[in-house]
Image (cartoon, rainbow, N blue to C red):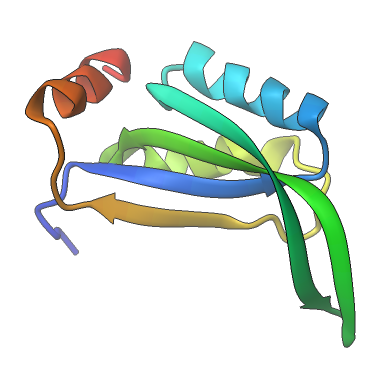
Length: 107
């Protein structure tokens, strides 16, 4: 389904700073993301019927919608989680110069 959206942000969690940075560098190096931010977070979630609580890293990757499936494939290849969080948030608008840069950096 074509939504007319060109850019998006992919959110993913990682169990460690080292893994998150490795993932971020790979996404940028493979031109699957123009910019990736890595933030420390604390996640509370339910897994296999139990409440869990973990320190994680949140990865925010700015990319193009047409690259999202390739980004997902790249993340899943080396991710240690059985079910990694990979979520797409479409970007409805933003600074034209920034969005153009995202397009150029991933093209």
